[in-house]
Image 1: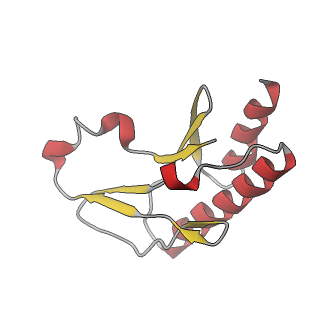
Image 2: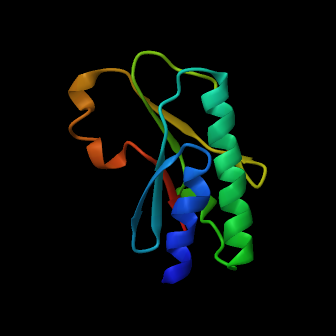
Length: 108
């Protein structure tokens, strides 16, 4: 699937790190301020444009934002007008268990 590799370069333009596995995309970014939140939303908008262009609908019901850490930011991340649920893990003792799920999970 050559076109999925294009998605990595599209999202990296917004300073988003990307991991791909089959038809799943994990996006992650360290949120330190409102500019990082804006970059995340711009990347999600670019993801929507990319998925529309390739006619690969996003399974929004499988998407969420996972916040790891004591400091939380009001992300209000959304895809196609749907606000993504935020799951917060505040302590490090759960980090190992959730390591594979620490990314924004996008499924097609």
